Length: 387
Ligand code: PMP
Image (cartoon, rainbow, N blue to C red; front, side, top):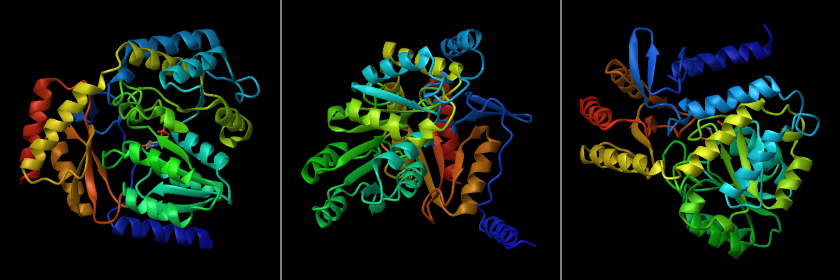
């Protein structure tokens, strides 16, 4: 047997033994509030469709219209013939939504992070990155060839120490999630802005989980009022915006540079027009009703307070993403199953996605829960978690 196949078999065996084997679940309508899995109807607290926008008839209508007008595919990369009018409208409105001079849309949030890091950083660059940053950031840093300097999660004193150590290095970039995807806590953007100025760095933030929720839907940078101090704002349409694709907002200089050097933009076919159209519809919806995230955050705060009163470890969350940290992988799967049996679907997140010993359930609250559903959820969670 080939050495590669032998290694693969061994690795899968180890993953299975550690209780970390992943299987693709067969779930129809994975974004809806209720999932139908076999005979069971389950409340869906695992999707990132935080505002329920993916079910909006406006997004669907925009996509239908675009298919009718442009067909199913953009046909080529954006720099060839794939750059239809919808892209220009979307980037124009997105830039204004984010209060940035320019914006650029990518085929996913993952691709956006890969692309921006591989373009802005090279082997002469130091990238200072929060230890709990998303995998796409870590992969982007690897691809860039830059030196990866990890700082302890949200530890500004540690970051300052590392920056001081490298203060004379001319090419420094700091990158952070704004809302952390597995812990739901918030980056200290004002301190990061201060450090960026003190040490003359570029500052890039990933607003994947903040967009639609914080800062009148515009993201955490707007919530803190520091949006003009951040060099590049990355985000995704695939979470609260209910659609698909990634984006960055920033100066014309940076956007032009990405258009000219971003291999993940240049060498890939543009998004289907239907997707670009539903992205545009989502941005317009958010602009019309920018505070849809507020009731969601209030609901999250109430649930966290309740769980903490019961002695349950919800980590440092300050958002609609609520981790229930259990620790042991097997126990986490058991509790997930118990909730499943009660009609609640939550994600079980295990190492290597989170650090060893911090396996957890990840509750992604959604704005379309009724008061009755929220109260039932609170009761059911208390029952299962206090067993
Ligand atoms: N950044 C963060 C913080 C994310 O959580 C995700 C998605 N899990 C991404 C980037 C990637 O976005 P997308 O799903 O659009 O590829």
